[in-house]
Amino acid sequence: EAGVAQSPRYKIIEKRQSVAFWCNPISGHATLYWYQQILGQGPKLLIQFQNNGVVDDSQLPKDRFSAERLKGVDSTLKIQPAKLEDSAVYLCASSPPASGIQETQYFGPGTRLLVL
Amino acid sequence: GDSVTQMEGPVTLSEEAFLTINCTYTATGYPSLFWYVQYPGEGLQLLLKATKADDKGSNKGFEATYRKETTSFHLEKGSVQVSDSAVYFCALSGNNDMRFGAGTRLTVKP
Image (cartoon, rainbow over the protein chains, first blue to last red):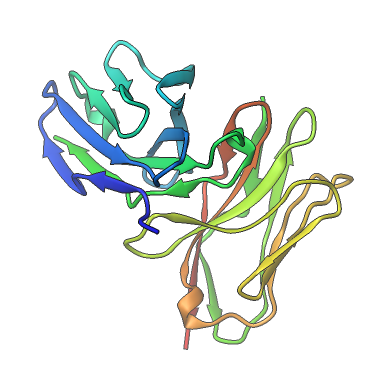
């Protein structure tokens, strides 16, 4: 079974530029999550999708971050414009249907973003 | 709100030593508890979990017991190997939210 795929693996941009990350969850997984992991900290949930609907985006900085999952499968996370403090690893995870956040989440390898 | 506090690292052990990584939590209701592991250059992967009080999760020689009375979920392994070197994250899931600890880096030397 293929795991959660993410691209790119690494990205370096200058502040005020835009960047987008892509995630393809495990086939059949209805729930998709985006996390931000700052160096030395644990992952912090940014947004949770159930199919193509948003379940929780309370910690997403909506003035600069946006995410979509139009067809209920893959998802993109965008930052526009980026700030220095956005430097982090962005993790995508998915979990099986009808289970919710208490079920096991399967993580992708992450995208490491450096904002200069 | 819900939170997880885990033992600060880094932790350095010799091969075959006993490992304990402490984790305590604060939560309303009855969360599920998890340990995730992140090997160098890889994504997080589930190591073990427990969904109710007194449950013991175990995998690859690691184990942790959900202790409601002490709000703890300490990770233990009787004899660590070099291949166990990684960052370990304690996490809880409660009301539609997953919270992670800051992670503990373990290095095992031969």
